[in-house]
Image 1 (cartoon, helix red, strand yellow):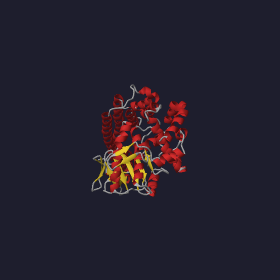
Image 2 (cartoon, one colour):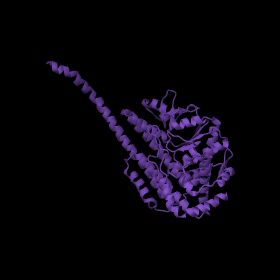
Image 3 (cartoon, helix red, strand yellow):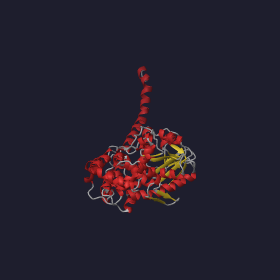
Image 4 (cartoon, rainbow, N blue to C red):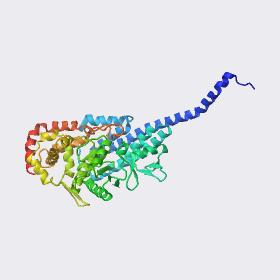
Length: 476
């Protein structure tokens, strides 16, 4: 038998090593190709699920739900679903021409059916995200796996951790490679359950041990106490039917309410989300939660803040139109303004006049419609808190003025509101902001389109509106 020469012997180990590596390399390339194929299919199928709900909603007259679903489809498709991208452009370019039939109030059963369909679609999309995450781990694409797990959690996926430290999301086992990352994204409640938490995900203070009370529509977390979590959950739950009646719709995701006992904790948490605010509460649309500070406030004042901020989030969750501050604050004050509501622990009544002292302050120093149309709530809280309170009261009054059926501009106002919500004017793209990856904008979306539409519809009547509104305020 001939032996290999010296030169061949020197290359033989290298050659054998390369040959041995070929199957491993082929396996890695195959797993990468499978991951890429699964990811592409996920985006197309997720977008299609929301497109189908949008077409059904449009057919049965649920205009705002249809538009919101088309936006969700575009976001889910990530540019892979041509129809989803085109529907959003058609909707924005054609305006009223996109809707073949006159919008009218839909039956409640249709609203509930739409909510059911969206939740079912979200569940399937969550499962698809998790399957793609598993494929990503197998392909050594851990960063991609994190993105898809995060997306599933933001869509409301349930997180479980067993005694051995094994994670499951919506019942599906999660690879050990993601365990440490998942631990960093979550916190333990007072009951020991691990839950996804936006501040922790953004690298902020870890809110371990918060008391939680939840159902599929509302999640309340607080450091004040278990009984308060239960009480604020009852309050928020009692609000939801009123908002659904007002808006003819409901968010598909669970609302999240955080209530902090101390201002310092409240501020620290906001900073973890890269937010600075001079107010005592806010609705953070990018992470889809409301955040409230209870320090220095009695229970009635905290209840008002909770109702006000939940109303903001609910509005955005049904149709993410970016509305001017006078409209947004007037809407929220209609449900959470001082004096406008009464809660006995079970039943909530809304729609009463603003508290007498708030109206007295407004009557003594009235604000014009022109001031309201250009007002910036956050700037007012920073520069002049007393004027901010009057701005809120005046915004509540202006919305009450327009919604009075006896108002000569009532039908035009409702039409403007429908157009803003139906076309989700100024909606942000994307609809959800990853606070850990990018500093969220001060506002999610641009209120200019809604403001410009208001000017085009009411501009010529503004002098008459000013006069009529001033008289309305004095008569409150």
